[in-house]
Image (cartoon, rainbow, N blue to C red):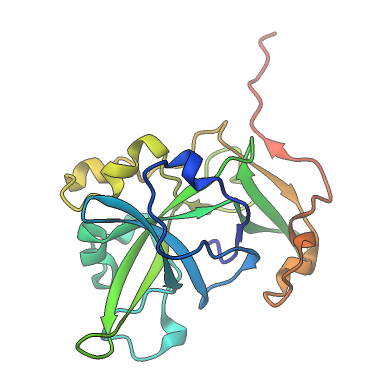
Length: 228
């Protein structure tokens, strides 16, 4: 499952003109779990960009290191950790890309997955609230993963679910029928995403240079087979 994000220079107001941003976008070339991450939620009928802790921390969680940063789409309705949040507290995490590691015989090769035209991606996620006092609370989030599509499956068997902008309101609205919401939990279209190999510097979450995302090889992307 994805454990690092690339968030930089996202034209969110152009993509979502009605977006309110009480919190500044958290940017990082190598964003790891257990850190703040920006998420878009529906609040009183408006889209709002806010900072959440990346790692779902329900009130009964006793060990912070056990806070999951990803949830499998297939278990959202059956696992107590995710069930309530999936029904009523969905969000998206806007990114410019996310990292995966391809397992090779002697090492793992990191790849950066992006939209093929480098447009922002809206990754489906859950959130929950933990009250520390009557008035203070912490909101946290976890990405949702689905099986990888045929193009990117050679790199990783699972990838974050991508919510298309036209379905954003349906995904965020807690009143949306759950069966309709579940139809969005599918692999990304073959032509949407591409991935290119990058430096192993990204393996270190403390490495925060833009060089994390510099390609060291060509982009892997879907090409339509040519008819003979």
